[in-house]
Length: 347
Ligand code: KG4
Ligand code: ZN
Image 1 (cartoon, rainbow, N blue to C red):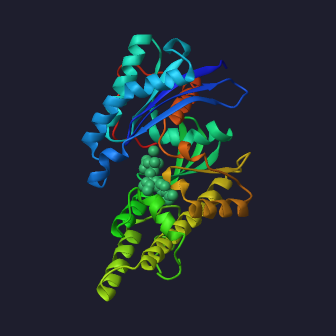
Image 2: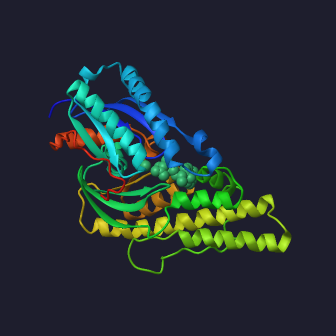
Image 3: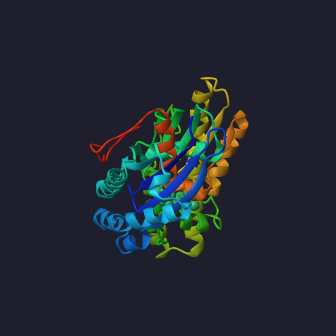
């Protein structure tokens, strides 16, 4: 195999990103640049991502991110082998902006174009950071996603289970909103939870009584709402300690569900006798220390190597798209100007 240097673009949610990744076979891949322009401030007033605002910001920022990524990498388009772009799933306006930008670059430079599934980008990140061997198990856990995947190859995934309703990040965000804490909810709930007593409120661990690796988090959010309303009815409001205890109880419930379901997913994965057993977590919720510790304990108990990419590579970024592009390029994948933006694209 030849050395490859690929430009990646990402614009499927509320981060505009461009990155250049280089891989020399036999060596660890190298992230030459990774630029992420977030949009948190643009959406703050609306309590969530507004698709139209996101699409416009992506269209405005993509070119700037690409230029910055190339200049930080010290390369022009002639130094690249291909351009990879998130072609879905995601907010269609943003995905379209990215795909059009990548097509423009490909048309102007003659470089091959590779459409990447955003989830595959997350799922292949542990190979970029830790050179994991196939097959490994990954838990994707973010504001929009929650699923266990056995990663058999760059374009070969087996879904072992996932949420049947909300994603955990969404539950963290809603819990923060219910308790009057700032968005994004994950970090603010985690900070409160550190000061709280997780045993004070007995919150449910949904679906633990059911077999398999499917999960549910919407009932947990409702339980937080009920506990809050009971406190308000009782005392007219929440104290600082009430808030911390509710956050701690909520976080412990998510931690326990993810750990127990991971134990089951790992058992199923290990039944296939993988050569180098490994379990990775990716997505914004992987930032949570308690949740990470829960997953690590379960992996240790089974003798499975546990890894989590560094935080900037857990959340949305374009280095993961460039890397997925490298892996797909080596499989012979090339797209052309008919590449479509897909709002839905299950792995
Ligand atoms: O992967 P990501 O950046 O974007 C997508 O959702 O695709 O994940 C963002 C989500 C948000 O819901 C955020 O609240 C959650 O990850 N998150 C956390 C933490 N940091 C971010 N959840 C729990 N604990 C955290 N420390
Ligand atoms: Zn993502």
